[in-house]
Amino acid sequence: MYSPDAMKLFAAVKHVFDPDNILNPGVVVDPHPVDADLRIPAAPLLRRNLALAYHHDDGDFTQAVHRCTGVGKCRADNTATGAVMCPSYQATREEKDSTRGRARVLQEMINGTDIDGGWRSPEVHDVLDLCLSCKGCSSDCPTGVDMAAFKSEVLHQSYKGRIRPASHYSLGWLPRWAKIASRAPGLVNAAMRVPGIGPLALSSAGVDKRRTIPPFAKRTFRSWFKATENDRVTTGDPVLLFVDSFTNYFTPEVGHATVQVLEAAGYRPQLTDKQQCCGLTWISTGQLTAAKKILGRTVDALSGSAAAGIPIVGMEPSCTGVLRSDAAELLGRTTAEPVAAATRTLAELLTDRGWEPPSLEGKSVVAQPHCHHHSVMGWSPDAQLLEKAGAQVQRLGGCCGLAGNFGVEKGHYEVSVAVAEQQLLPAVAGADADTTILADGYSCRTQLSDLTDRRGDHLAQLLAAQLEGGAARRRD
Image 1 (spheres, helix red, strand yellow):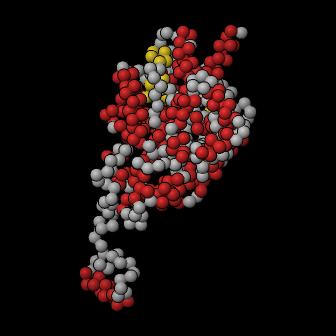
Image 2 (image 1 turned 90 degrees about the vertical axis):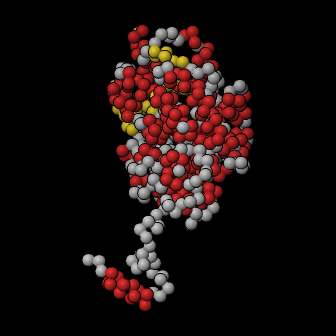
Image 3 (image 1 turned 180 degrees about the vertical axis):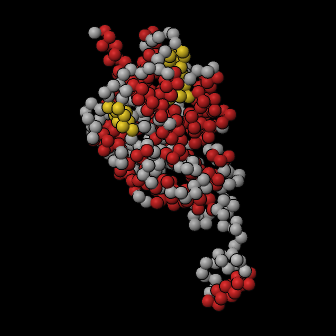
């Protein structure tokens, strides 16, 4: 039973032995008010009158980073269940590289106590440096922390009006450079093979010299689509393909396969009048002012189809994820939600339609879902489609380790490889030669080609190959 007199006696004894009040000040004796040390009320620095690019928690960055309550699920290895969070912690085993560690540093930055340098504090950039922006925490964290968005916001606020790292201009502007290179891809590819030119170009771009430069396609996907217009079906339900920069300029074969599968499923693929971009590379490097402009134009270009009830199919998971998630955060839900609701993955569209896929009986598949695919859209429709086709699927958890620009940048190579060694590399090493390595993400396929002698296939390529095989057997 609480006794005021007893508490006074305890206080008197403490003051005798601790006259300077060094031991546990404000705890038992002369306690602080219950709400005195709450972190959110004590965070005045970044809460008001600040133009945040992301709309997380109504634009209140303090509320957003305080979503983390310290549960520590980001420190556990959840890859056996297909989870992703947190690949960098699994690689380094350092608390600062966990979602919780990063959130705590951002909380301290906002409080302005232990960290008083604001957005540009070295401590802040140190803990965010090894964040892969995989978005695993956005789905796997019990409180929905989205560290990828926080990292973009920090980079955005830190470098506004300032000179940025070289990789922000090279990798961050990749769609621009790819568009220019597509005018003479053979010449660019040949130049990159000249001894000394490739490594020099990589170094000046802020890219690790151990990485390779993927060749540009001889013909873009959009050029192929226009040139083969008369060869395609003119009936079927319309579907709008969102042609991302990676598919258009680097791997048009993914687009070819997607068109083939969609036509087999009774659809009539269409494209936007002009090449559009989701702004992903600008987002991941924190160039959010430019990203919002680019993404705004893209949403405008897609809005007509969304309003007409035409589904929009994304081929690159990370770009599809931007349309489904980041667009609403950056542009506002009223503007972006109709397009987000209309945007589907290939597997989502096909499973919703009840399409009967070609048989994959006896086919073994090692599947590396893209992190954004797992975190934003979910991979269950893909698993359902493969199961329906009869494939034997080993689904990997975790991240491939490349994660867009992360694994390419200087200073990240070792961690990138360490992340790949958690799930992807052992699974590939143990796979038979005729096992398909399924990797819809361009980053995942690039990591495979850089670190192994195997290639990854997109879901559309796997299905299209079976369609072609079935047609050949029927002709025989």
